[in-house]
Length: 469
Ligand SMILES: *Cc1c(COP(=O)(O)O)cnc(C)c1O
Image (tube, rainbow, N blue to C red; front, side, top):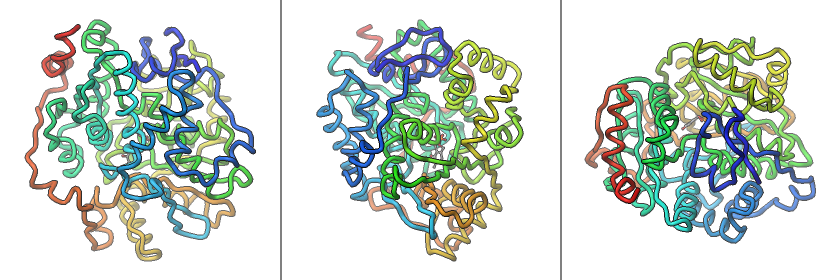
């Protein structure tokens, strides 16, 4: 399996290189040269498998010669052994044809653990084989950081530096990152927005000498291996609910577009996913795009669902590349225009194609609280604010659906206890492993939104890498 860049200027690479590189040298994102597809019989044969096994078999389709199925089985078994539910990603029925796919039973209570617990092990496996080390650099609006740190803490071959927007993550999210005492972990609090953090990370990757010197790697959702690791849970849910013999729909609370892109990849692999509902808070660029081809960035506004406080959804570029018929030149031009002007008029045919598969939905904070309250009153279910945007989308856009709607439940309610308490009067407790989080000492460095200062900190932290460079 070879991977191509959405901007067409980087040479095609194999799975290992794509895993370690994250972003392509031309600033584009990697996608498989062609999509692996499964026949209906092949899909049926995967029904009922334990999650780790299902996951190994599907990811193997993307890993090609880089990893044997046996090696992948070992890694997925380890990655998912620590989840708090034996099904790993259980389905919980909320209504006649509404199912929450609970993706938050990993160590940091959010869906990113599903991919990152595997990614940390993939990095270690590949680096050991090569006798190399890397520095992982990432930006987070909340969950990616803690999930990445949990995946990489104490690993021999890895240093990790995570940038978060100062004061814009929840208390629990920040503490999950800053209370990890491992010497290979560094947290930088940037005086700016999440998009600023993401731009700093992108700039570090585009700075070729710095990137080589530090051996930078990414764990943000731009890393293809992360997308690949999110495909199996869509397959698990769809197969459990009757696919490939029955169509399903999916509702996803969306920020960087990584989670929904993985669902779309599952569709490209042959699963009958009819419609994708894309939930946004008031940072609604994707909803505006889908409704009226208005892709224009506005300032990021804080909301009750901070992991969706994003205006530039980095993974959208992968969809754009596909919508433009895999024309890398056109994709590169569109992305450069967007970066320069903050606007991107997508060609009409491409926009119509997008609107065929995806429907946007926006919910403000008051609506989110009302939805958490309604769900609890009617079903007893406690949803976090991100999940609630997706349940509301399913209600609004597919009421009385005849096909099962899979709702991505992306965070444990205890990760956002203030919102849940405001809506329901109930303060969901943290699971026992995190109960003393608020007593643990924190460690982080505050920095201005300045590339030079950030690079200096990364250089100081990644000394093991520079020492043997
Ligand atoms: C990251 C995150 C999202 C958004 O996922 P994307 O892949 O960025 O679209 C939604 N909800 C929660 C709880 C998250 O942590």
